[in-house]
Image (tube, rainbow over all chains, first blue to last red; front, side, top):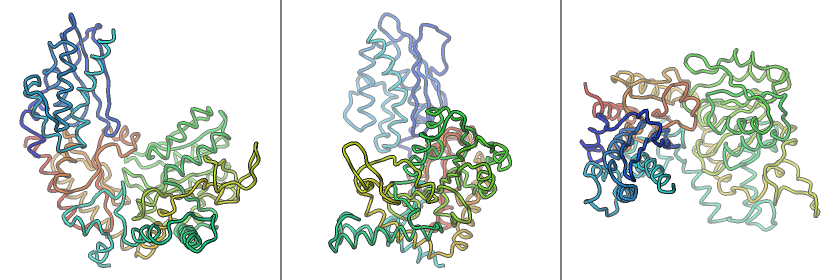
Length: 142
Length: 401
């Protein structure tokens, strides 16, 4: 259990970073839920010259889901769309237990490597990342 | 009754001696006789039913029809042909709604409750959207029991359908159906009972109850997955428009038309789940062989113990401390249900966390996920103690002091 709920994860769960929405009309809001458990998350993205200027999250969910949202915002902020999409892919590899690039994946995100042994929790860990991915792809298409 | 002797009938218990299986409301463990019957069919019969004339096929058909008789006796139906085999409660309930979608109009009213499993009320949400019929939710009391008087007050000449649970899969309450059914019949409405959670826990007598339709599944009754029952009064089943047409259910066929067989064939198109139906008979026979009063007392003692012990843990809220069946639904204030479940899973304690396919109940409780521990006759005090110990451990991990 200690491998799933690492200290870094519990820290992000108890003291979430970038939580709460801005009142910014230009920001894009992406809402996703996990139908099997009822977890819900909204990610708010604001871009500036192709880079993430601000990224926020809000929602209800388990500790893994909420902590992962907090970590995701720190992992992606200031990055370009393509960089961010690459980082997100690396996170997906990590939680599946596949090889990933330790250089580009923010170290707090690497604390989620324990999720690979709890397949039922992969959806919790990736929900916020999926929301960010969806938003980034929207910007990419524009 | 000796608990060890009962447990010996469940191979999963022998295979996982350390496991505390507290998820019987999702699916019960399977009794050996049911497993043997499925295996026997595949090994020794393996043919289709009802169509051939050779020995093997006749044996399979006889075994298949023997289950129909067993179900008839299990729910005390008046006639054998009032028993239709389906793939589960969900299909049974959808078959009824499908048919009434062709009959109801915007003048009609459907009554259901917020205590329902999705399979019980979503078919009527769709029918209501498609026909314009008004869908009415009966009021619940403070403890989320159905307010029977409140429901009865909503029944009047426009009421055509009442879709209602017999036992709530989240709160464990038994619905007092008799007065509701009596009133419904006074205005010509039909009552459909979701007995998925009732069949493994309380005796069912459809004639005494006088319900019009009733559905349950095999896999919650110690039997195979993939098989369920649709019971209906004969004259009502005869009016159901089959959701599926195809082999086995037709009588006359031309290029442009067909007529259907008599019941029950008219509602069992295609090759049925033969092995599963055959496996259902010994599962129901097992329930019938039990001293049901003893089972109820025994499992409710475990339930009472679980409620008492869980309530003694700081921050734990038991949502249904007065359940009628051995289902305990609880939350830990400030800790998500899935986090509790992960701790329980790691110590081989099987529970369910989430909305239990009854989101409207969650809205009422004001939580989007709860933990549900559901008890049955193979459980023991050690399972309850393990549950309580690990819930406390998880609580202490996430919350200070």
